[in-house]
Image 1 (cartoon, rainbow, N blue to C red):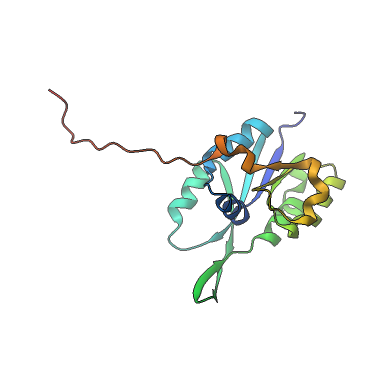
Image 2 (image 1 turned 45 degrees about the vertical axis):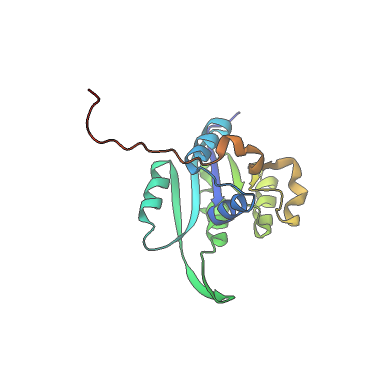
Length: 176
């Protein structure tokens, strides 16, 4: 790897929902270490909708090494359910193509959303695209022309899956 100035730009909702649709949960701590160790990612921007009551999640993600970029959320009703939407597309494109463009040598874009086609194309033209990481095999056809650049996160399940650890209860007494 030539450069140590690699950044990741992560569409958190697309990543999270894409992995869950494949039947597993991503361990974001393991994923951050994977990006650092495998691709020398020094900064990982995680674009995420901001919800009240999720402060401990945000703190944990920051402790794991993510730089959080928040988007206000909106709610809407569909099929009798109240759903929350935090569309981060514009912020992710703005950061990767303008705000921090001169700070990094190569970028990893993490999404399967075809709305990012123009960004991936631009980074490729500028020779700044390291990889496009998609959560599963069901990514947008618009991204299909970048097959050589795609890394499928679902193929990394054994390394990146969240596994709850059992906590043992202690009575506070030592054995005689």
